[in-house]
Image (cartoon, rainbow, N blue to C red; front, side, top):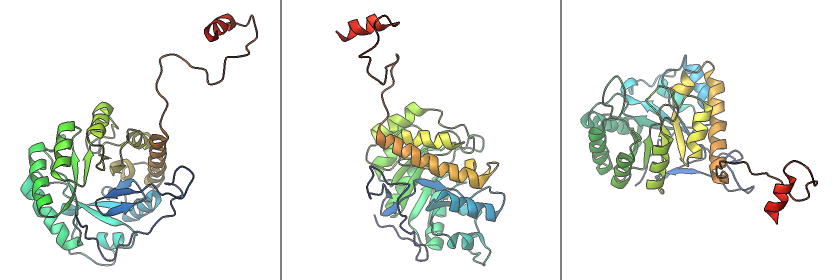
Length: 296
């Protein structure tokens, strides 16, 4: 599936020092369809105290893929200080999303408007069930995903943390599936790591990103340690006491979590295991006899 990108958005190749591993020059890129990114942090653009803070936070995060809620943006406004013009000045790719849509019909319409206005096939698909929980409406989500894929969109689908729903989205051809950590804006972090881990096992070959509910840097690191390919977040940065500092923390947390996953954590054990050899312990020292017997 070919991704059409805006001509004036050229994402530069970063030097890879933060994302490289094994001590060589290989860069651990995130690839979604034809889009290759060195940053695994996707950042939203809503709720910042000011446009300046938003811009500084995006820059601090090193994010290269930025989400924009199409229903909340004036696509016709392109003045020097307009929202879209500000984002045009950054080396980022825009990822329009269908936030605020409650039916498949609404979501498809918003996606088509985004493609026409922003000249991109990328779409983050959200179809919400109600105003209280903001949880996905699975029936409408699957319907919208199917229609958008048929219309040659590159769909990144926001989903609940249900393994069956996520697998259906993957099987129908979504470019990425994005299960929630917890409800949008809740800051609860990962409430069901078992389901997220199961989703990763069921969908081993498609990009998976944790989306929604991240509250702080440790939540983002945990998502990466579970084997996820990236994290999409907004409120954790935009509503933080110091958004720019939190954006920096999220960047490093995701890098650290990814490297920890690649490094492979040690197994959990119920009892202690000494990191150094027990050989050569002084006779008569507490536990020495048992250690000697155990080693004989």
